[in-house]
Image (tube, rainbow, N blue to C red; front, side):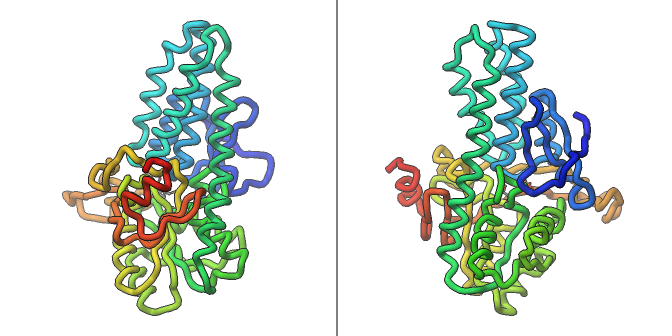
Length: 355
Ligand code: MRU
């Protein structure tokens, strides 16, 4: 993996680029200070970029993995010709294991694998797989636009909105899920201000959400996530709008750690709680939140800040990076297909066309 700078202005929709036959990922670990890209030339590099948080956010992880499959096929065709398909299992497993919670990763790989099984072995698989990865990318962008409109339809009056982590263009193929709703609502004059939770320890809210909103001229106030309940109590906040990494078949929602606390506070204060996510985030194989694999990351992420220790030596740490909000605390799930109010297993099945 090597790092490059683009010779043109960078936008939030540039998180994942396929340019000159290679995969470029905006290095989200460096934002907002630096706008640099990482070039991935192999599937292993794409997997490493996902694990290391160069690229993050459920849909963006899935799209990156799809391009990773293209890189794997290119390598397999060059080295093994007609035997290319045999070489794909290793890279596919590597990509699948890059991060556990976002179901979009497995969803995108399944779609690529289905195509792999249909392709003739005597032809170079790269062009067909690249078209499929680009379709996944474009479809996600279009889904976010549709979701933005459906979500904005629910917001009836101008108000403050709390969001958590980054569910923006950077976390997706473009436009964003939760930030897509906020962008569409802002275009209709419905957003007084966005309260962005800073989102410890990676500070996706401070570094990424604020970066996106400031660039779009959407008013944003940064707050530590511990301030969210007090912010609701102070008044002026009508909605919490968040994204998701996996929604179980009963409507339980996994999202960045701290989302569950936000949902509890929202219910206590009469603030509406909306989850915006494409149908690729809904996992009908997962019956409920207890079955969702929750990623735990290194203790160092919370025992250190900007490279310096923040706790005495000998301190342990519990660092789950997602939590599960039970369906009964969710007022609306919004997908590209429309709105599910007060989600439950029956409504999810109907929405997904699996009654
Ligand atoms: O650890 P991250 O930054 O990948 O976590 C991202 C989130 O929790 C997002 O809210 C979620 O993926 C939805 S993104 C549209």
